[in-house]
Length: 379
Image (cartoon, rainbow, N blue to C red; front, side):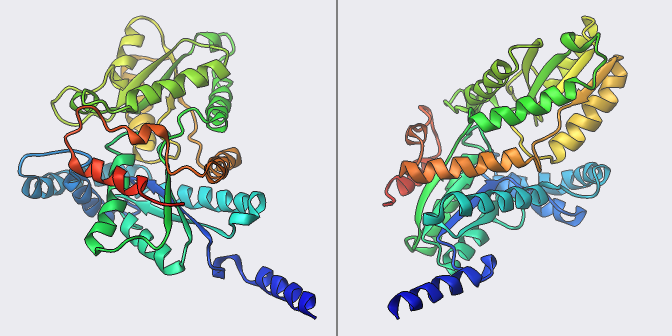
């Protein structure tokens, strides 16, 4: 009788719709996010320019809103040219669905798994996602950065937001938190990048293919941040190295940097100046590879595709300039995400060893408080 009752209980649980079951493991997918509509652009920029973890401005509470208001029309024009909004939420949802489906199959002991999206500057915001996780009764919470390479300005800002959420509430988490804070050389990530590059190289004329210059383009960073000890440049370089190893160094390549804002020194060489320089030297077959972005958003669809491959390419007289497809809905990428979570669960570690080390010249006390908050979690 007892065995039969237990069996019926298991069957009843199995019949519950996956979305209705209490999630045992919640995976918070952290990212900057992007405005889905033109009406979302101003609030997105406002949150961005008020984020002191991302940038520090004089009289930021006043200057931030001023800059956001001034830049809104220009940024809205850019989003209009890529379809009226960012597709990053759509891609994150697709990746999350694929990830948790695999995890439920691969790790029944930690199932059900549920993904949550925590964007920094647009809905669904990180704070709202945490509230939902707490309400759902999640037991094990994994903050999973969707930036493969760590920077205090991106992943660090998202982790600080989690810490600030609990501090502002004056409560301790009911969930056990741990972090996947970087994954620049994960084998399946490298395989995805290599596959997409090889696919795009085949689109060049065969006689030109071996001479195509691969430009790995990543979001730049102010040198003031780099000089404090931010690990981002080294980790982006590590990704590039592994991808080229996978490609057997089939082509000449460079790591370049895009999206600089303002007059202060940033990481270089810049993507646009590199394209100009290559053309002047007769290297007019170029493949752009977004190496720090896994999903399409404005910096791939507008900056790389329209500004650089489109307008700048014509101005410079390139013969062929193409852009490697972002990882987006590639099933292998969802498998990479699932593998990262599975390995993390098995490791029983709070975070990477690297996260325990603050930047040597860190000037943000919240970074230290946030690290201490996570390191004090008990799994």
